[in-house]
Every structure is written in structure tokens, then in C-alpha cells.
Amino acid sequence: METSSQWWLLAIGFMGQGFFFMRFFWQWIVSEREKKSVIPLSFWYFSLLGSFFLLTYAILRRDIVFIVGQSTGSIIYIRNLYLIHREKRRFHTPG
Image 1 (cartoon, helix red, strand yellow):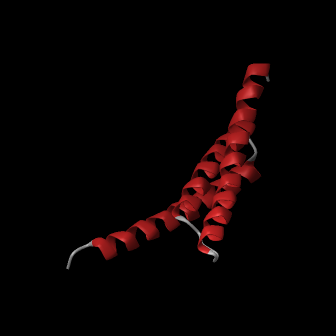
Image 2 (cartoon, rainbow, N blue to C red):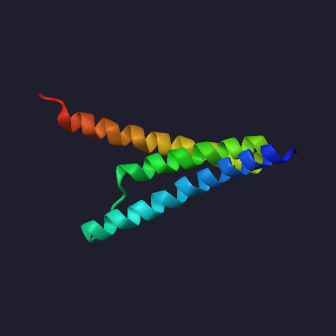
């Protein structure tokens, strides 16, 4: 693999890890503000972004174990976001 390809591959992998780090970091900040354990909506978006970048990294590396792990996680993150947004619509719908 040429050097520029390795650089991009590492950048994609580290971006994915960065988003996964941010989900817990931001969850910690929000929980400290609230003085209780809270999972903010951004947690799920950071999870989805991290999963997307790590899935891309895994596909480029052709690592089937990593591919399966990241793609199944994405389904859970998307489902949680769907449930959260559905709940918000339910409470904001007049009637």
C-alpha cells in the first residue's frame, strides 16, 4: 500500500475513534451538568458517525470481524435515533 493511501486509511480510522471517544466524553459532560447519568441525543449521533468511519476503515482493511461488528452497531444506533425522534414527534403533535 502506498504512503498516501496509508495516511488516508489512518485518518479515517482515527476519525472513527475520535467520534467514539466524543460520545463518552460528551455524555460525561452532560451528566456532570445534570448531576445524574444522562445519555444525550448527541451520544447516538457520535456513535453513528464513529461506526460509519470505523466501518469504512474496516472495509478498506478488508477485516470481516471488524466489518460485522461495526455494521451491527450501526443498526442499533439508527434504531435508537428513530425511537427518540418518534417519541419527540408523539409529544409535539397537537391532538
